[in-house]
Image (cartoon, rainbow, N blue to C red; front, side):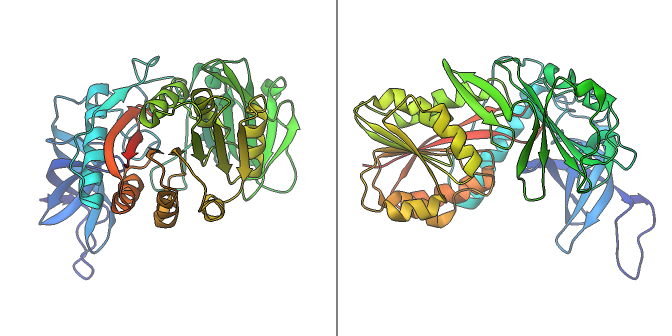
Length: 430
């Protein structure tokens, strides 16, 4: 049934109408799936098994998008969202605040398993592991990027929209991020503000994006905080204080520039380092690759395992991030970092002997070319770290076609309250 705005008979446009439906399954991206008049409907703010009244927000030839605006039959997994800005038409950052943490992890596991099955034909049950330190799923995000509205208020963009939802504070932001007071200040003349903190050092930084060529005055409350400016294209320029923050993992200190990648959950870096070592089982004297190595986190973890008789080679595309990695690993002469495109570098190494490799690519994944190039190095084990189940499944299929066996898939709840999940897949070959 439908109610609300009438369907226009000339176009069949359902956008703006309300439909009543039963939600069946979870889908990738924070959606659940139901049907209305035999048409697939992707619905946010609901849970499998619920009967809801949903407002249609988008329409294609194949499916509808909608927000659940009234829960007619709630799921036993439903809870009251801890943030007042979570819900239809509000902040688009958190997808699962209306689900218990146990249900969130179960849903994420179902999504990973579904993507593996649909895209790669892999049947695998996936259990999502809780990370330590955030039992309520709040206060974990050490890097938060705020959008700024026309009035200078910091907030977050609404789902699939450029409109900004101003907020008083973010429930998943780390306490030290909230202490910077970004949401209390006026940001006229800026389009974005990114607040960064270290969970292991007293380091904070703010990266601002001015709306024009001129750098406006900074709010007084940030006088003691490092400030950097971001230009179009992502280049970051130091304005005041440090260029980034320091992080310590397993006794090693890492310099992480404001434009460099780092895990945002305080426990993620150490948890994933341990998972990668367990997946690769590196032995003394072996050669290990760390592709898309970032600031050198996994290269540092592998260096201790292969020892001074082995070698670790990292590859990082971004020049500033590669400089961070070289600096962080400067005391390990058997480790080197190349600044290059991964595919280009692998083509040069076609005859090199490699024993184990870890890849931690951006959300787009490694792609067929890199997967095949890595397979040609005949390494015995690959650890694939991924934050996107769809591209992970696609690339695992390529590795399997190249002769690898999928040994294991572990998933970690590195992003509570959101649909995102971090995975470590282990691939082996005789």
